[in-house]
Length: 213
Image (spheres, rainbow, N blue to C red):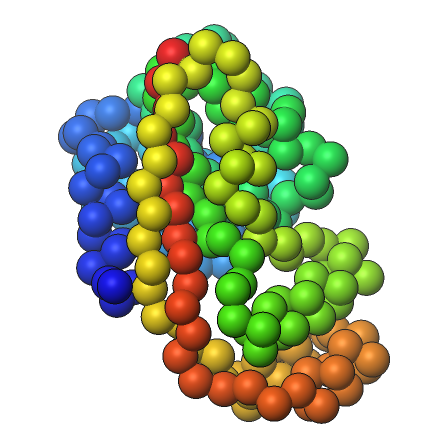
């Protein structure tokens, strides 16, 4: 079992970014962790996000940031060396998952997807289920899926290999409640979190999918 930093380092080693690679990063997010890492590794980075505020937040990065829908990417076929979605797809409307992954395949020679599997521990799963319902009620998405789900979205002809890592993830009730209140979860969902008994380190399985045409 690895800690997060070890898994993070190994995932990036397997993705194997070369200096000068043209890379598309799907989803900038609030922290832009994957975008910043790609820049650090010397890639020529284009990052897309549907949320204009996230683009504005990170405009100082040495990357091209574009507001667009990942299910309809404004790039020509095979333009990038790599298209990646690092812990992003689970936050996208599931009805768009197949279109997004096929767009990634279309615009890049290689693809990389990093996601977490559904929680195995009942306590952590209960927290995750409440979070999913809360985000859905707010028009957002937060649902972990098994490896087979993401593999099944890729079109025929894509050569795929996968890697799995089990890491410890800490869930603290006070932290979850603080985040829920900050993000404006419905009162019902916050009450459900308050009623749960949980806390500590839980096994979290993370997988990396690498694909090429």
